Image 1 (cartoon, rainbow, N blue to C red):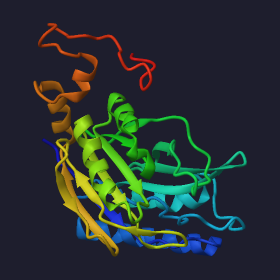
Image 2 (tube, rainbow, N blue to C red; image 1 turned 45 degrees about the horizontal axis):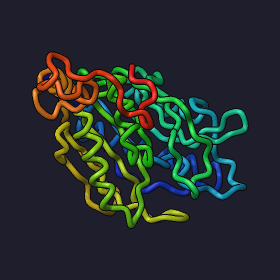
Image 3 (tube, rainbow, N blue to C red; image 1 turned 120 degrees about the vertical axis):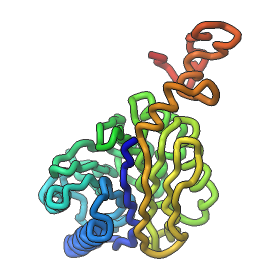
Image 4 (cartoon, helix red, strand yellow; image 1 turned 30 degrees about the vertical axis):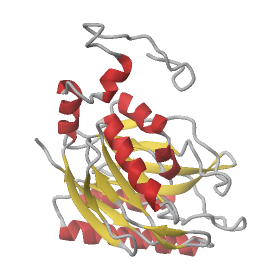
Length: 289
């Protein structure tokens, strides 16, 4: 099967107070892309953490959010085109007087393939306006990408929603902070295992204006096994290979622990051939279709 070559950049970005600070983070991001492609020219996808461009929790008078996509994103899109690589970036997006926590996936032609606004903001400290829509996009090597940003990944419903939309690779840019290193590991592994999907969780590192982010960026396979993990401190370039088509095959062929099928075909061994297909989950899942 086709292996998807992935690099996650565990980045220590500035918490920006000025547009000049934003430019420094953009330049650092471009340098990381150059370094990654020089070291691993076969790379298909580069992932950056949450708060990579403007940092986290800027002061109220710091006018650093901007339109996404917009003038500031064009240089990143152009780098993807030049290097012929897909990449994920995270921004503070300004739109209609609101600020959103937004990630985009850019394809190897420099076009925005997916834009997602964080649905579950980290209240009460994250004052961004929540998004209200999930989406997926097709990527290279049989990948279907779904985005969940940091706290999104603490909710089983988010990974499940993306999986039923077809995502076999869940990309999770984060600014996960101490003292939450334990849930960091088990939420990444759980979202992978329960959805028969890869999870690529790229965490920020360093101490910002409020929190210390501990790194430990992690790639998890569809059985919840850790494939690769960066150290729990310091900037790091983590390289791994995943096989999205294998996750799809497992979803189709498995007889045991096939969670996506079994959720909607309960007890098919006792109620053949398809089991119970009604929806017993009246609170969590209002629409079964």
